[in-house]
Length: 232
Image (cartoon, rainbow, N blue to C red; front, top):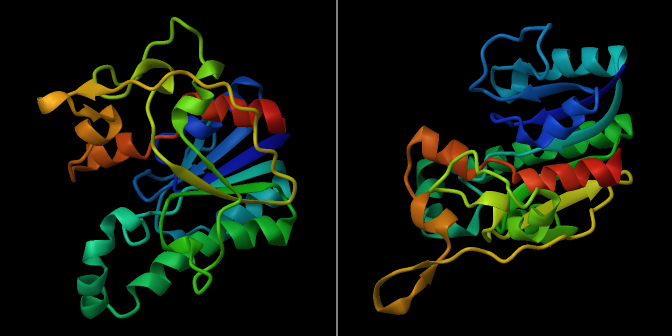
């Protein structure tokens, strides 16, 4: 049976089109409980250093067609650069530890020669001292056309329908991953004081709660569908 794997993935939005098409999906994230082998997606919890056995078993038992990885960006995104110095004082190895989670997706993809995609915001991964520049950069609204015109947002009032918002996102890919053709929609802007226009994703999702972080990190649904169509 064909399967896809998605690492550091709580919502599972990236694999939904694959599930609809009949693939078995496995999503790994520390927020998940113990896996239920009957479910699709099959959710695997625990820290990343406990996933080796499960991943090895998946590659032995399934024809894995694609690997996705969304390593935590807290210590990597340039938006948090003002905190880097304090983090280095508190933990001199914080960057190496963050990058080790990035390398997991790369190493699995290369070891098994499976197409892979690693996602993160603009940040320090691009520094040659850490890794390399991304292969692709996109905004969610550039793939909103893959969603129907009557699309309903899973988080109305926070995320616009049809992924009509901007959030510059970087991808590092390998082994034949195909970047899909863009089908853009016009991004929504909120108008604030003095006529300033704000990205709703930034304006409404700046909090530190776990719920806010999960919504903020959710894969744009149009992009997920586009990737499936281009790579299946």
